[in-house]
Length: 241
Image (cartoon, rainbow, N blue to C red):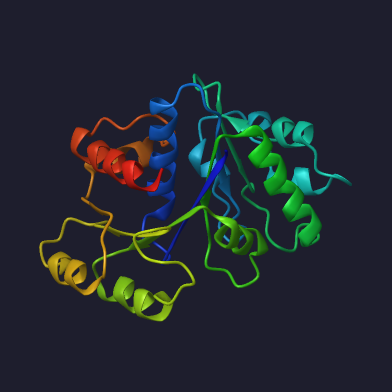
């Protein structure tokens, strides 16, 4: 059966990078499965940021899917961005310049149809959820996800966000996993104290210079040349998949 994994966390927590690296590593490990990566962010559209070296006509928008009267598997695949040299990996998201005022708000029926098509076409669906109150796509993903991954940074901002968002209908360690992500290399970050405060930790991800370089080079969808970081992602995947 298809599996949907929803990633969420405070702004700037690194959830997009973690979600994408989890998706690409799953692709590398399961060559016979189709992997879908969904980015519903309309405040800071990310699809072009993940594929900055693509020609403009190679990057399509999720809004074009919602523009259809009905959402079908064919329209889903037609408007997906496929990663080069990864024939069974595709991404869906909004383009730079688009926002919630660019097109009508997707109806619940269309959002349901989107997820139905995704589960038909992909074995694994990774969703980079937002914190926007009016983001119905992220709300739907978190509601129906088989597994939710909560990203927390070991700083005051991250812990403040966690304190305000720690209550959940999910049970930690079963279908809700905490991941502590070090986004900077400053030694003063209270990583140990944060890990102690949390009930369970599925992974502690270190700062990765290689990951930062990939982001700057526009090659985020490629496999990361950082064995230590990749091993941590693999260990996380062994728990959530």
